[in-house]
View (cartoon, helix red, strand yellow):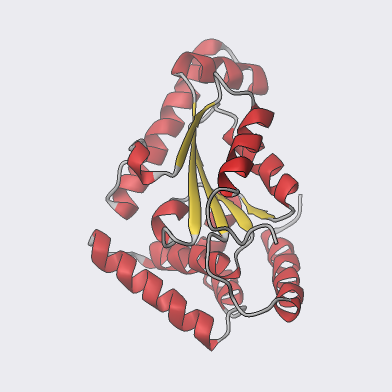
Length: 226
């Protein structure tokens, strides 16, 4: 597995190439944020969606590692020009004011990292409350859910563990994610009004879910696919 520094170097290089080719920034949705319940298949859907649309993907773990490192966060931030930095600062200031946030050091880095990805656009961001960070006119927020019993079966099968261990894993992860969103964004991760689209993978298979999201993107003002 590549180190976080290598991943960021490669991503920064892609952004630099993309910026040289692109016209001035267009209005419209440029990011898909994907929140998911453990065992719902959300991670797989995110990867397949990014592949289908030909865009970047940023998983929760990568964003977390970037936000934890001041140096890496600064490297990401430096990919924006002055106009982009000014817009990012405005986004963050508005978010902090509207949600009455008191961001700690980690949260400050997290907001800047997600905001920078949002400015570059053409990406799927998995987790870390990205839908609460980016302006609604710039992102399409998706939530992937499924009944708990169904998710427990998936986790038990995926990790080859007992149903009891799988249940504990699902409950713990659910609790951790709820607590994270409540602590940092004063929001309820399960509230459907925080999303543009909620998909139940117990009734839609993963490929169908990808197609539904892609079709929904086609119905909004979107600059993801040019």
